[in-house]
Amino acid sequence: MAGLYLSLASTSWGAVGDRAANVVLFIGDGMGTEHVHAANCFKGEPLCFESFPHFALVDTDSLSGLTDSAAGATAIATGTRVEYWTFGDRSSNQLPSILEYFQGKGKRSGLVTTDYMTAATPAAFATHALDRYDLVQIAGDYLSAIRPNVLLGGGGSAMTPAAASAAGYAVATNVDELAAIDPAASDYLSGQFGGGQMPYEYDGIGDLPHLREMTGVALSVLEREPAGFFLMVEGANIDDAAHGNNLPRLIPETLEFEAAVQVALDWAADRSDTLILVTADHETGGLTVVGDNGAGNEPDVEWSTTGHTRTPVGCWAWGPGSERVDGSMANTNTFHALRDAALLQTFYLGVQVDENGRHTPIWAAAPGDTFRLEYSDGLDPADWQPLGTVTAETDSIFIVDTNDWPEIQRYYRAVALP
Ligand SMILES: [Zn+2]
Image (tube, rainbow, N blue to C red):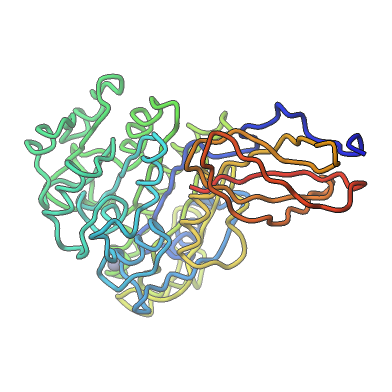
């Protein structure tokens, strides 16, 4: 009877499948799908991320309804909706961010923005402050508590070169200093460019780096960790241009944001371990494109507000796990897509069959690891059914499945939960 069981080889335990060792998350602040559409009209062709294989429309609400960058980024960073203007209650580490999950797996992390560094969108990933304007705590959390490897953005606003240097960060304050950074000698890098939010591309940015340049340097530092990394890159000025209903400034900001995505795409092109997501925290301006005037010309547009709206935004996904981005989803699901793509670990199990014909899945685990057990009667196609959740107490797990149908070829897998 035992021979009826076609088990996967008992040596087959171990991780399989496509996981994202690296995640690069792009957030166009305030960037609705019509902002992308307007840039597309001006460019005369789709932006690079518009051809990503997976897309979802994302509901951006906060716990208060309409959102801001703090609650909007917190939904993406933690999978939890919180009140407007806040990061939620993190006083007792109740809301670990995706960045902290990655750190917990021994991976590197980085935050890049054209806003001042302590602004709401990057802060949502690496602070335990409650209030988005508690800049002193945010800066302290960056440098002394959570310590992302890379912090590149506008200067000032509670960040100083002296404090970053004292905390062990290499510091760059202009594009030349950034270009001179040796990634091999800079495990921690703080870029503090100018005295606040960085200027619009349209107005010229002087000796400060473009978003694409910051993205490239961030990758060069983060890629030195073989375990992988999490990187968030924000195009912050898209939001400000949209608040001003300012199309001439909006379009270059959106195209620079696209150029930063292209840097990551070029970096990841030959790899199978990197997930790239492009999304927004909310829409700003109630923008609608009403006429395409061809490449090189601004399209005709209408704006409905100078504030934020509840219009769904896009999420474009490329790489392993990108299929998790699909249809319509809540902003909190962006967090789950990122975490699951990168941190869920699937084991296919070896099976022991005893003299009574009972079969026992077995695999190696680290004590304390928690798994969701599943089985499927066949693999073509697999139909994974839950068997329950278990936590390993020793370095292996034995589960006796009392399946009474020995003629069925049953397969098991365990999905390691982060
Ligand atoms: Zn805004």
